[in-house]
Amino acid sequence: MAFRRRNKSYPFFSQEFLIQNHADIVFSLVICILIGLMFETTAKTAILFIQPQYNISTMSTDGEVSLYLYGWKDCATVVFYLCITIILHAVVQEYVLDKVNRRLHLSKSKNTKFNESGQLCVFYLVSSLWSLYEGYLLRPSSLWENYPHVHLRFQVKFFYLTQLAYWFHALPELYFQKVRKEEIPRQLQYISLYLLHILAAYLLKFEMWSIGFVLTRMITLTLMFLAVGFGLARAENQTLDLEAGNFNTLPIRLLVLFVVCFTQSWLLWKFFRFQLSRTRELRLEQAARKRAATKQQMQRTLKRDSGTWTVKLLF
Image (cartoon, rainbow, N blue to C red; front, top):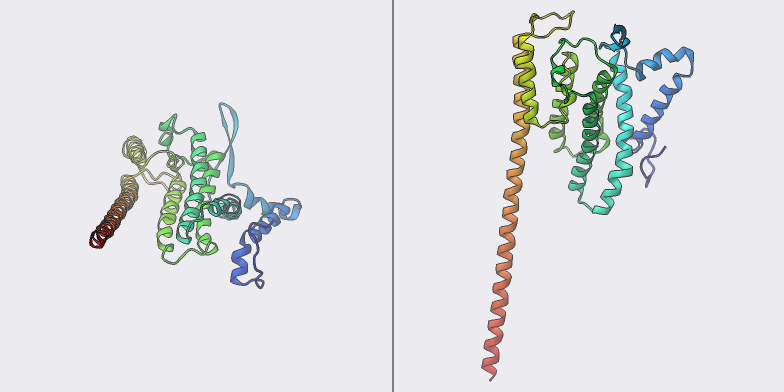
């Protein structure tokens, strides 16, 4: 399964060989784990990577329901789906973005930006549709009702694990995609912020992040104040209990609100700063074009006037 065209062969296990063939190598590892399911001696180990762990069965009005907790075994599942994400990243790059790039004839810097934005657009689209499927928009009170959310449904836990897998996969992709050194700090900033929020939502048993990709930042802030500032503040149990998974205390609520407000404000500030700088650049370009056009017009006028005086002198 080859994802990229091989214009040149490199020595095995060299840096260029790993970069050029990283998707094929990861694909081979995934196949080995899947083959492990076929044998009884390795099936128990392989299932740790593929299926979410810590499931328990409880009775409800609809019958027996399987719910999930979290634990250290989730790291194996995240690693497996991190490999899947690397493969999907290569597929989108090879069969979608590279074909568009060849038609647009972008410069190297714009090509890098286009690839980054294209990958994020695919991820945001899938995440948005998934979070809409969870139904939080229809009943937002489920964000804080029955807190702490110790037991997670399969769809919710799998959503968190795939989100973590995607953002952890973004770290080795900085190496595989040969991102320029000056671009690495900027990408590390938003990768770290996403990982911080998703890990906090997963470990603190908030089901908030699954809606974050659909709503705007202002609506996210409104919901955060509604859920944390008002909903959880009215809960009866507001004592820290690590065993029960209850983190509903005033200091933690204030810390969560501060982190979210600071992050959203920082992202908005970066956005407005970018828009202002872009507006200034456009104005400078327009002014430069006007000056160039005026200069050309003056040169044409001078040439026409000089030609007229030459004709008059001849006659």
